[in-house]
Image (cartoon, rainbow, N blue to C red; front, side, top):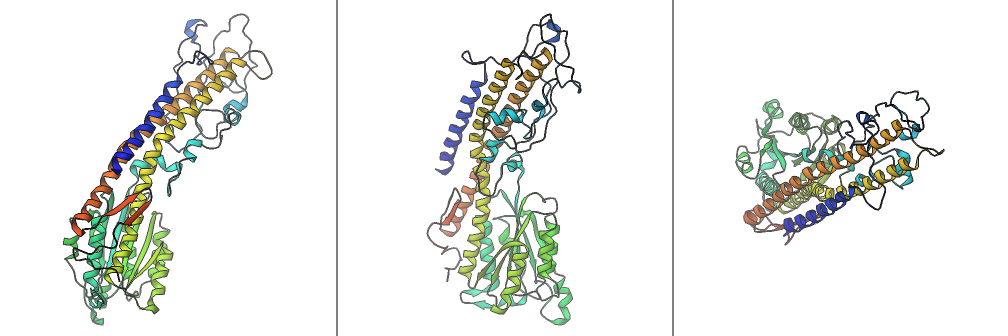
Length: 459
């Protein structure tokens, strides 16, 4: 139902864009579309083949080089322009000021009530967590989450509804089951080597292991990975966060997240708060969330500081049920990020129609100015007329190329993410007997916390 409804919405918006695009031809009741004079035709006109640079990516606003008219011999009676100090720039200087890079001079957009400093259609795209500038790289945005689990000796202890390590593994399995496959999962563990014997402290503190690199952990592989270790030794949180930086290599521009589950403080003489701060300032776009599982009150402070330094949240959990609830909250963040991309993809069709409409307004107004002649009176010279014609063509082609990018990006992204969300939901329903509802930034458990498949009720 969700996929079909969104597909119908997207189709309607695309039709709107195509209808508007069909209006770009000559209007018999309006001003004619400009044609650049052909030097070879001796004053006759033909469709100008403007030589324009590659269109900027959607959201980018470089100032393009302007096409210039080739000089021709003016026939008798044609007004002659004053000599231009810059070759190929025969128009008044205001025609060459284009702050947002769409080939429409700033003064033209200002006269139409548009913003010369930005692309209005991009600015109006309102998707939480996404800006207009992000849309150009929409298809390449990769969500990645690294799960880090504390398997130190204290995780062998019990809480009200079971052994901590078993409950933590169940919660991570739940998280992996509900994660859409558009997110690359990875898994790291520490504290599982050596023992709590001080004689083995160094071995234990150096025992941070990336058991599944990002992209190699999923709902099928995670249960097997979790069966490879048991609680053993010390707690090297700082070293684990240092290794996390290496795990995200090559994903600096992605949507990256660390979820750390720990039941206590650093015990390996590291500085986990500083490690989280360095990770946050390393040039990697990453957020560190910390789930404190059965943490003594006097030890909560350090875990809260780690989350703060990592730009994330601290979530306390005292039982297996509340640990699941914390994982549900983290899943919600993952799904919201995916749905932000769906929002952009769906809104992209409307944005394309908006760009087409603005292009029609702008090019018509430029043609009107071409027909009216210079503000001081008279007519434009042939060179000036040709320059305006080429600007009209360049502005129209720019808008068309943006629309092509939008169509090529929006459809596949929409299909991919909705498929992944629905498949994740089906897995949770099949494995845990519960259905998760999602849509337009609303993600919640439809019937309370999971109660089957080995996952405990929330306390």
